[in-house]
Image (cartoon, rainbow, N blue to C red; front, side):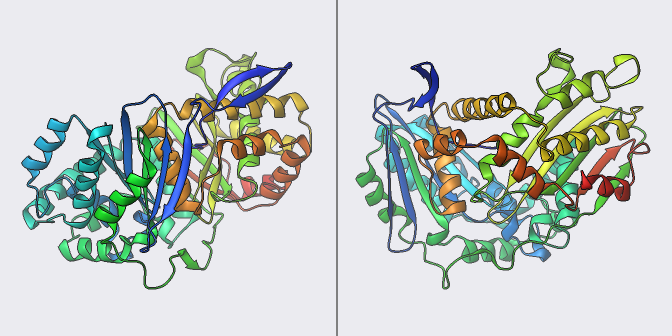
Length: 464
């Protein structure tokens, strides 16, 4: 999902413009001697703050022999440290009234708290303790192993997650991005304390971290607190690169899983997409906005502005739906990405109808058969999404942290909206020809896949 910078919509002189939603907000950065970036945004009128540590290391940094280690560590972080028992840690957080959380993605590990401004120092003490001093006791490891296996069972029932995991596996086969975040069950069962310690010592480096504070925070104070609590993390022996000197290889391959018991079929199509720092990152988002997103439960169909949505809603016999929902998506990483359409359909649906409709829509963009109005609408929707996605200090901290650790910089709100506003119809058409035309395509599908066209036929359709 695209996350941008916080803005508010206004109207001036008859044209749409954007101004900062938090007047007086100030963004500052500093870099400590160990390479750790300290980033803050002061928000006037607030008495709370979100502080978090964003680490450029996720499941992508797992060893192939211990896939799932990054996620396993997230579970163990709250099970006690060398100076805080699990009970003591829980009581301390409860007594402060803080909200603490963590998550692992393919590229990042994040620990953050939302707290009262007066408690920022103590919350940073807790965060640094979790990262540097976790006990990683064998008993806790065994207890969490069962919890993670149960979580894996639950994820297996979330078919959108399953399909995208399979999509990564075929598009980036035998590569770090192809592995799942939780890891395969057989690896979860064998991860041990040495694997966890090795992951920390290898990846928890100062130059791979950003300490972010948003809300009622003073930047200079945050820098001093960063030195106090996070200066202990060493810098990488050699400058860190997400994937060395070799870019990931995208494979145009497929996986189909026939499951007659499923009432709904889930399909994801993808071409190689854009990285976080790609110059065409926002053009990709505008193009996806033209293709749109639709769900039959929202009630719109024949009147939807997206031609693909109209086809999805009325393209079957007698004007019946040929899909239940679809979503044009962009999934970005530091050096690559996936871009395509994910859709669901009833088990007895003719999947070829919608796959053909998707490729026809891609061809429409590539051939320039789009209007200026469509481009402007997609740009307006993108801007609105940027506003709505960042409605509090936690969301803003997430935006800052993600940008800083994945790209090395943060685009200012003005830069983000300037880039979106400058996109033209010609930019979208040229981009579509470059990204879609004659490109290899990856596919993952689960459910009744009997009516899905062959991969050879779908690939042929990429001539658009």
